[in-house]
Structures are given as structure tokens and as C-alpha cells.
Image 1: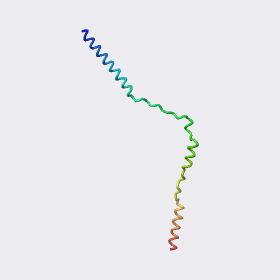
Image 2: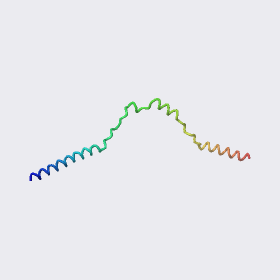
Image 3: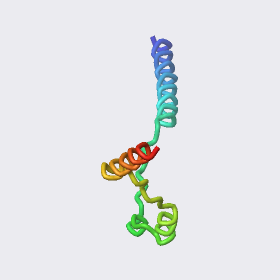
Image 4: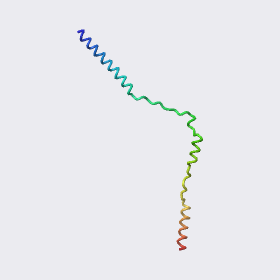
Length: 84
């Protein structure tokens, strides 16, 4: 009987050690939560260099032909056709 108790105690000790080892491996594999990087308040505002670059690269929008311009262009074509 004593031998049986020793065997079960030994098995329990081995299983407990294996369980502890597996828990340590599990904790090492778990992804760590990411901390949010907070920008300092002064970095939220534009710097003078950024403003100068933006102004230099600014392209005005293309002028679209309005109805008035198309009408004038059409009248010019009609006058040219009549002169021929």
C-alpha cells in the first residue's frame, strides 16, 4: 500500500511540474497588449516648414468652362462658318 501511495505522489509531482512548465510557456506566448503612443500636445499643430511646403505644392484648381464661355465659343464658331 505504501508503494502505491509513493507512486501516486510521484506522478502527481511530475504532473504538477509539467503543468507549471506549460503555464510558463503559455504566458510567454501570449501577445502583449499594445500601449497607445500619445502625441505631445505641441506636435498636433502644424510647423512652419510644413506650411511652407504645402503652400509651395499648392496648385490652383483648373478653371472649368462655364455656360457663358461655351456660348461665346459657339457663337465664334458660327461667325467663322458664316464668313466662309
